Image (cartoon, rainbow, N blue to C red):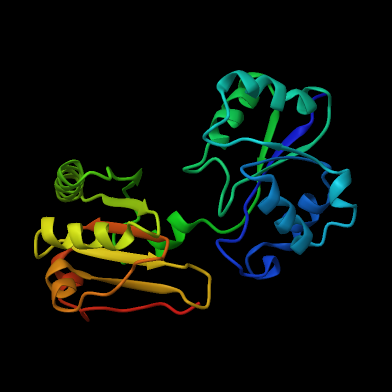
Length: 250
């Protein structure tokens, strides 16, 4: 019998695990002895905060990140083939979503291994929930191009897609480029396109604002140094006539 691959979400920042992870998720995670993680050091810190009882040195922790060659995946999945349960951790949020863990999950499916995703925070879904834009049709695009011309072209394409299909477009940016992307979005998009900005979700410093590009230009904010999820869309006329901006507290 193969083991089970548990997909274990982690907090989006320094939030205590018991604030964002259900007891069932925590019980499963603390019972495991084998983990596949993005970074061993931060994974050990998370497991310690989670309250795992066995010594951290006794755990088997393997790294899977953007530097891991595909040839190593069969080696990583070996404990599962031997009948041992394994936990897959992301650095923050849900594993295998905008995360290299998806390749491991695909291989596990191909080999008939049971997959069990557990409940926990997802920055993408939380940002969509709080955007005020449609949740019926949406697409996540990860990071947009870093070069200015390519970034502007990507923003124009996403804005056109949002308008043509009534589909919310979500994308993220690193803290050191968040301000640049925000300013590019204000420069490229139409006045009546809506932009939602979500930063530090579930943390005390959470920011969640949604308004038209025209109103953003009147009241810009500073995002440098914050990990952000951006959403753009074209709300119905009734929605766009409401209050210019709003926020949701944690």
